[in-house]
Length: 184
Image (cartoon, rainbow, N blue to C red; front, side, top):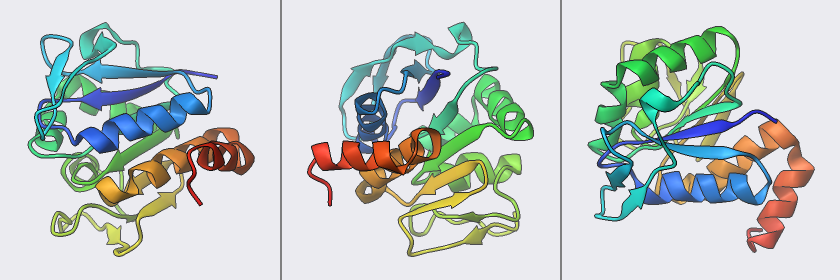
């Protein structure tokens, strides 16, 4: 299985990033956390400091299984301003590769890049932007449309991760992970 990448920027939503990584790793998926900062240290929106596995400039994103953007503010804004990440997201989508974004990132990162235009998606309440042709599907918590998974916010983090697992490894594996985590 190819490696997946979860991108971290100062102000990221901790539970969305870390729960997703945790769920994917429980399923046996190789996942690398990637700092878009100049250093591996990244501070979340609620002051949780994490050390990413790699820096964005050191990663070959061309053959990724998943490119994943957690939300949080101003984390999503920082992700949207990261040119190497945006180029990788557009190319991954062009090739039909898997993409996922949760909370503010569907609206702040994916929509302006044209990735979810004319698609179903969800984002954090109040973050939905008009003018991109996105079919915002509130109040769903997680939506899959083709190669893109979007999630609504922190409460959807485990379901978001499990949906990513189901898309790559099947619903049986996702259900086994959920059972082990005591998720009904």
